[in-house]
Image (cartoon, rainbow, N blue to C red; front, side, top):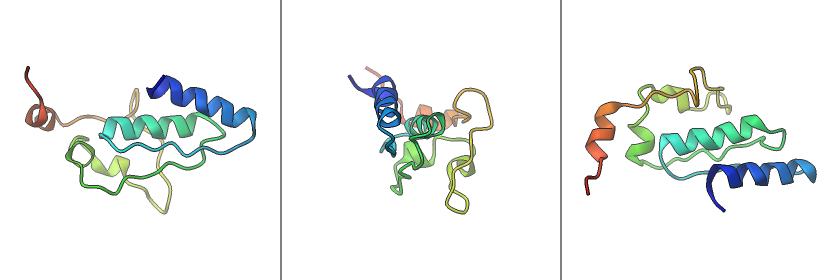
Amino acid sequence: MQGFSHSHFRLRIAVAHQRQLAPHCWGSAISFVAAQTLALHSPAGVFVEYPMGADPLLRELPVAQSDLAPREGSLARPKGPGWGIELERSVIEKYARTP
């Protein structure tokens, strides 16, 4: 098991055992916001590991990069529908793979 469902399972275990969990992800803006959503969803999720790398799918993909940036050590809850980020279409096209 991997991915979002498995992470949610781990959060439930952390809550049951009164532990904290820090979701982390080294990938795109989408996977980072998924990890952030897990932390916001659960009382066990008090931290989110914030990636400092220069991955273009993290740094260029969201239309408004400021939505993912921490302010005074905290991340804001998503404002829009779903995970609250809008993706930059030109970046998707730039890094798209064709079979």
